[in-house]
Length: 218
Image (cartoon, rainbow, N blue to C red; front, side, top):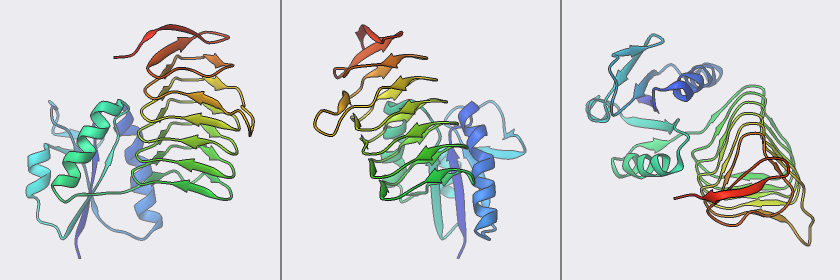
């Protein structure tokens, strides 16, 4: 049975994800072709890997095609996920060798866990979660669909992050409590280096220490 793997997105993040995929397949004793898939690219190869359009990837003969969506923007990630599924491609999960995942972590399909990611205990995470390098999710957190963590995010315990939120590089989210979790609303954006000490309303962008609203996302 021939299976081929596609990394959708040939930009900086895609190039960071490729070595993880290569090592993951090697460790699983899977000898398979890996391609970058990009709708617009001026290069035929990146880091020694062929770059294909979606149409070219689709016409390659294989029994099964699997993809990961290595694009941070949730709008694009969701659109491409749906497109790939419509064409019969399966999502596969990507994880570095040195991630830490403790007890009772429920995480849905399509995730990418970069090196040094730590997921502790009793955590629920939705579809297509991206955790970039050195990110952390503590106990009793609930994270929705298409949430993105940039590098170095620290999400402490008893936090709810709703669908489509973006948490910027180095952001720190204060712990909530069992009876009153801290909530990051749907589509909210947490700016780089922000220290979030209280809940953030849906669609709001916050920045600073302590984090304060600076506007609404589109």
